[in-house]
Each structure stands twice: as C-alpha cells, then as structure tokens.
Amino acid sequence: MKKTKKKTKARRKKTAAYALPRRRKMEFPEVKGKTIEAFKLYLENDDISIGITFSDKTHLYLDMEPRLTVRADLSDWKTENWRPIKSWPPQHSRSAWAEDSIPDC
Image 1 (cartoon, rainbow, N blue to C red):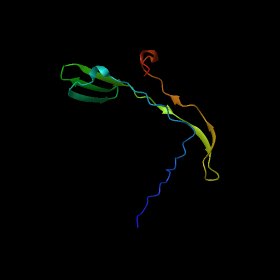
Image 2 (image 1 turned 45 degrees about the horizontal axis):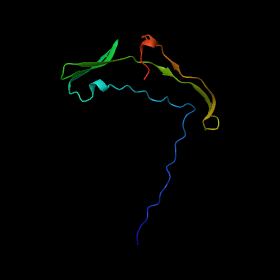
Image 3 (image 1 turned 135 degrees about the horizontal axis):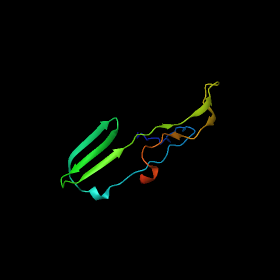
Image 4 (image 1 turned 60 degrees about the horizontal axis):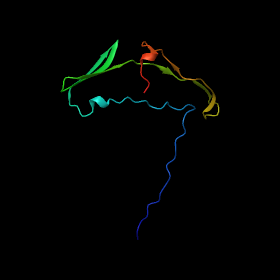
C-alpha cells in the first residue's frame, strides 16, 4: 500500500502595523571579475568603513554612517490580544553628511 503525501498550505504570519521599507542596493560593475588582494574592516568611533584592495592596485572604499530609526505604536493588551490604537511615522536620526551628496540607489 502506497503512502501519499498530503499537501498543506503554509500559514502566513500576521505582520505588524507597519511595513518594512524596501531594501536599496548599490552595485559596483567596475569591480566585477577583479581579484581581491586585501579586505579591511575599520570599526572606530568616527570611522565605520570597509576597504577592498584588488590585485590591480585599485581600491574600493565603503564609508558607512550608522543611523537610528525609531518606530512607535500604542496598543491595547487588556484582552491579552494586541489591538493597535495609534502608530506614528518612523523617525530617523539626521545624517552628518549632506543629504543631497548621497546617491539614491
């Protein structure tokens, strides 16, 4: 007697009251196919960056600025079930860099 597998649908998790922002990406076609000679990670108070040196002596430097995002919502838990009352728009810390100098990806 053959056993047959029963197909079941996966249940989707309920999401919070806000949606996560779409990820942005940067691509570097100029370095495609290059061989990495050295990879350095810098974690200092005022310098968070990655340096990649290629065998042809070119260098890609990624300088990162951490930012803080605060999301707030007020909810009722009296019935032991989450019930949203109010959500506020996310608040982002200000950049130390000029906003118009950062490319939008």
